[in-house]
Length: 492
Ligand code: NDP
Image 1 (spheres, protein in one colour):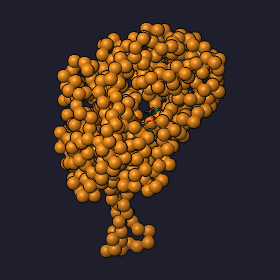
Image 2 (cartoon, helix red, strand yellow):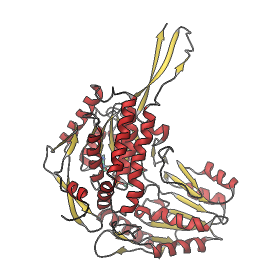
Image 3 (tube, protein in one colour):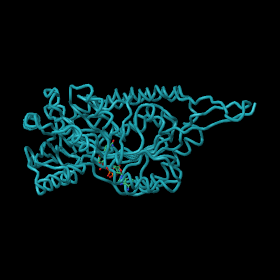
Image 4 (tube, protein in one colour):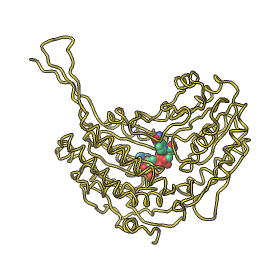
């Protein structure tokens, strides 16, 4: 296998497939392995373990022991803070290898991992390192008796199971591990079977950083086996899930056995409204990259575009021109802006949706086809002449497919934007401050960006209304997902 010239990454790809349990790299109780495919070449570059339910038992037992035995849960806040900073240091020191593994596994151009996801992962650990020493309860007055000293304690929830998707693999693992470890939870992580390499590399760095055995355990493989086992496990106190709304609902069902706490980051079909007074020079490229970044495989992608009729031709024409110049190619080509889709299934899903859109009457303004003979590349695509009842407008495609429509009236545009089972993001472009605040209040979405925005920020809560999820990751609320409150009354 010569997938990479990066010696560290090459060594990692050829390591024995194993699981992280109790700080040891152990073999599975089964023998099933899963091939790791480079989506740009369709070549097998490595293998991971397809964990058994027995492997999950061992990982949960290790986490339970680290938590109940106190080796992890009794570490001081300062020790947790220091370990999280150490882990961030190691991520920065290993950024080239992490970016290499991530692009080979997921497909997005390496330069974006190097500039964004990998430093972002370190940043997430540093951010939550800061929170570790800022966890405290409150004092309170009893309504009934002045002779009681009353206070609350914030305690870690216990063992946290984490199930993550393939679209931004390292980032998703850190979004969950960082607050959980800051809170003092012991963790069992199950990354997506498509893209487990960066989580496994992160596991090596976690051991190197000095986290005690059992604080973080990593099982890889098929979600239907190991993910479902984590979600249903009675010794898991909380499960944090990012993925499809369909599997999110299964997680909720599975969690009923011990009523474990559940947080969910699910799908989206996020609208963008462009008003005639908008700064179109900024709006056009931002809307384009809002759907083409990561080949549209982003839950928050701006996949529904509503443009005022006065500027529709200019905006959609501009996005089509942007798409025509967008370099689609393998992630090691420094000029590539869009890589392949993650796998054949996703390629089939995306092309299937575009076919459905055409059969429903939408027109392809650009794209609409697979690219190249090899690799899961799909052209940046814009559909026009669509309407709000089409499946391409209503369902999450999770690919580089923008559905553009006209509007003429603001209230009508807001109603159409909100007419979705999802509510993750909503965006708008306007210079009118009053309209901007009106939209911010009226959008039924967990995140609103007006005239731009930044990548996900660990200090800003992220999550969805409606079927886009439960709870918020990041910020104080993200930490609270891994804490519970105990009220203490002491008679004086
Ligand atoms: P899935 O829901 O299929 O998978 C997510 C994770 O769940 C994977 O690790 C998967 O394992 C696992 N899984 C699958 N079946 C089960 C099960 N029965 N019980 C427990 N775990 C299971 O989503 P994708 O990975 O395909 O990701 C794409 C979807 O995720 C999109 O809909 C997207 O919008 C959403 N998403 C949402 C985000 C958000 O922040 N709101 C962010 C990123 C993605 P396996 O790898 O074996 O399939």
